[in-house]
Length: 127
Image 1 (tube, helix red, strand yellow):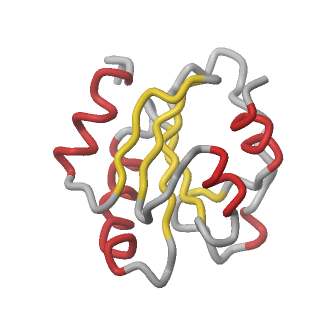
Image 2 (tube, one colour):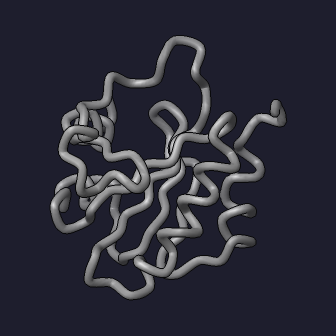
């Protein structure tokens, strides 16, 4: 297994909007059988203005694309080992994964068009 996935499996995943709700924190069980949706990891930090501004945009992407994409928000300070394993050096950052493969990334503040260009080629066309 790739080193970043070993770390990823050991870290709690926090659904978008649930960073402060400990009851929502759970260990990833991995994708469900037949769930081939890519995962968009949003590395953020409360002290980062750009990350706070991007949070609602990423949440919107998570809602509008929930049938084709899983979106997970990760506090980069609390989970520094995961950020390091995925070579995230800037907050905010987006890392797009499918299975064991990193499909793409955006570092720094991104627009809706930037995110669409990142995820577009990798999400299924099913509604």
